[in-house]
Amino acid sequence: MRPQLPTPPDTGLAAGLAAHLPHWEEVYRELHAHPELAFEEHRTAATVLHELSRLAGWDVTGQVGGTGVVAVLRNGDGPVLWLRADMDALPVHEATGLPYASTEAGVMHACGHDVHVAALLGACRQLAAHPEAWQGTVVAVFQPAEEVGRGAQAMLDDGVLDRFPRPEVVLGQHVGPLPAGLVITRPGTVMAAADSVRVTLHGAGAHASTPHLAVDPVVMAAAVVMRLQTLSARFAPLIPPPLLTVGALHAGTVPNVIPHTAELLCSLRTFDEQTREEALAGLGRIVRAEAEAQDAPAPPDIQTYDSFPLTVNDADATERVLMALEAGGTLGHVLPAPLSASEDFGRFATAAGCPSVMYHFGGADPADFDAEAVAALERGALPPGTVMNHSPRYAPSAPHAVAAGVRHLLTAAGEWLTPPATANSSERTAR
Image (cartoon, rainbow, N blue to C red; front, side, top):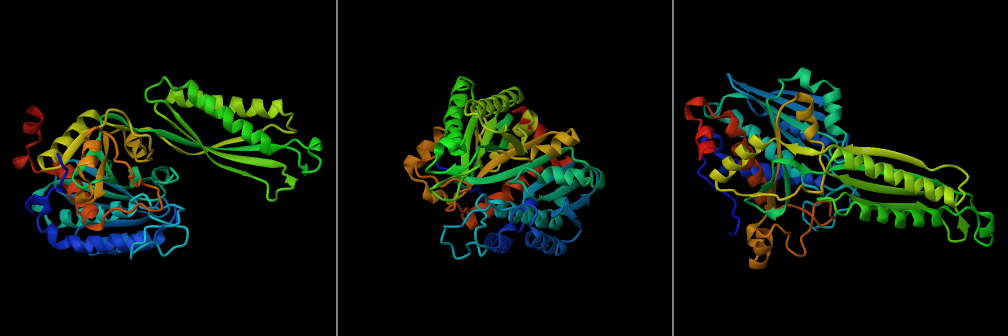
């Protein structure tokens, strides 16, 4: 079945949406052209504040957790629903060639957070325009600094749960290189935990002509990299296994000088807390043992930073989201295993003690997917040549991604916000 972007009649929460989609697409392009790194999202936050100021009923607060924005819309009795969009970009030099490509050197919206912001703003407009179609309280959370795993916690530390209505459920979405009209998620663990680890190895520098006077940290670093691969191999039988990557090795400046230090930057992704603790402990043992074996003058420094928790979906809430989306024409796919990417979205629901759901949706033109690509998707695989998030060539299709993002948010939110007189969730659950 080839996914297609659902285009239901513009009724209920979606009434009049088609006429406003060009504006939200332009907001997306503007955000894409002006990306900002974690906790530097000042222009992005200003755009959010400006757009929300044009909408009736929203009570808007800026500078939450630094550069975050929180908006509250109350519409009678009913559940409190949080809708979250992340705002930050990545230190990536854009290579898409788009006419609205990044104007900031070395900074790019390579993960689609610009789509998330535009889609949530579009959903906010629809909710304000159609109070007759829902009831309850919606809290729109525009979160900074997801890419470094610290934005959600910064908002929590700033009292977001005490300053605004506490959620009964939290919903989040993430665009990806899938055809618009396809949503993927799963109950339980849906995304990995992640830790960045900085390892500094201390040696003794010398001239390249006298290596016998040195303790070479470059050689030490090379040995550590290879030894860390054996750590990954020992966990291979686990399903899914942890993933350990050395993404950077920094040492020296010229070819004829042995440096004093070498630095490794590692990424560890795990799917349960016990494995995380065992893998971090194993990494430390390998690094310290190699340093001792090479008679390093000082023990290595090992720092864990930018940590992300597991993203865990509530089973009942996930079923409700999927059934609502599918009833609206979206093709839903339940993942057989968690994704190895990571998010800090789950911190909100964990702190609030409520259920949450994160789903991923397609932001590409379905026409770009031929029969072979569709067959790969049906097998649960990505087609060959897929440009993934965080690539300098990744960019969702503006009309397809924004329309899908707005419609999915409205559909998922409507599952909780539909007035009792027209609620149909219990009927769908019974089927």
